[in-house]
Image (cartoon, rainbow, N blue to C red; front, side, top):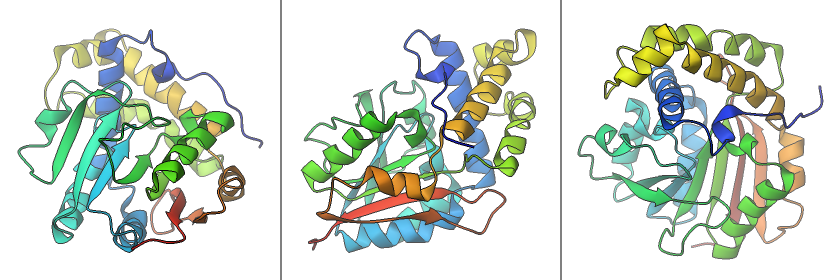
Length: 256
């Protein structure tokens, strides 16, 4: 099927904070427990090292993404003095709590536009589970901003326009129901909006289906890079799990 840029609830500025944080809490719990980005981990760390980066700026972090999972924390510890700062257009109000005093991880408590990253946030850029949120013109702007600053770039997402990915999205409400009481920090709003008024399960289900419709294939991702010949780009699927993450990685042709 062709790519469809349909409506996602979490994209909307009017989305209530309790719903937004509850949904991103759910996604963070799923990502952390399943380690769904493990198959792309080695490749991303290799490119970060090739670029000589000492800091990663994670964009559109939501509730934290893979950087908070045990395997990514362990990999980060093996690559000292590399550090990661987590950022988002709508910063999570509990993200700093999830860092649990890890000195290699920090969070920006202000809104960060992925297409206009402040000069103070210099570093290799990563985006997980979120690049599909950007229409083509905005996606190119995100790449252009990284190129303008000379920063390496890597995105990955496990949604795709495949039967397996769509089928998996039907499990998201189940995950929301199962994980709501155990996700930390505990929120009464998450419990109420999961069981009493099941808005959060509906949002993660709908947005998950739409995310699959929006996610680009490797050729479509490479088409976005046509205007940036000063970078080396690669795109593909990282095999090794139930869902193969699609990725786009770029680095300057001249780097340390």
